Image (cartoon, rainbow, N blue to C red):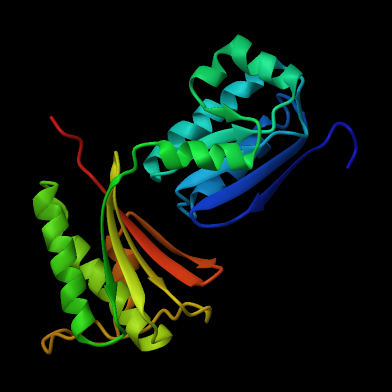
Length: 249
């Protein structure tokens, strides 16, 4: 890497992902950082840490890319923090007002601890076994969440999506799982954590209802969710989907 180059290295993880930005941030390279940040958000981590320890901002105004990425993170239900800023970079962030919009911490441990103290999204969770009846239990969890959070417009789609996620985990992972439903500013977030690191299968049964057509699997999730994906973790994987909420009037 030459001194004029900017490199962005994504280290995916759940619930914490890291994006390392190293080199010179200029008008020419700011789009690279913006694109890398937006791509890192598509995995829907709970928090994205952007490590700027090796970043030099040649032009102060380019630092507005960080609030831009943070606002994009709101759509994904992801909090964003900066870590490792040098004194010179920190002064630039303060001068431009970026530090008032995006939290800046000395290192990842401090940032993760600060995130843990933040009020989290409203969340319901249910541990389930890999058996057919678990699809019904997952639907009941989603129905309860949507009723409790007054989201009747999302209830049917959310229930169908979680049915498919759980059915896929039963068929292809065959392990205990944790189903979670979280309410975020602009999305309802559904996730199924299982204990298998096998690649995600895109086919599967639609659940335990006899009148449902088998074989639709994750195609339903893809068609009905605002976004969805799969992320491998140390203990298995999490398959997630989000539904966009209508703005309240």
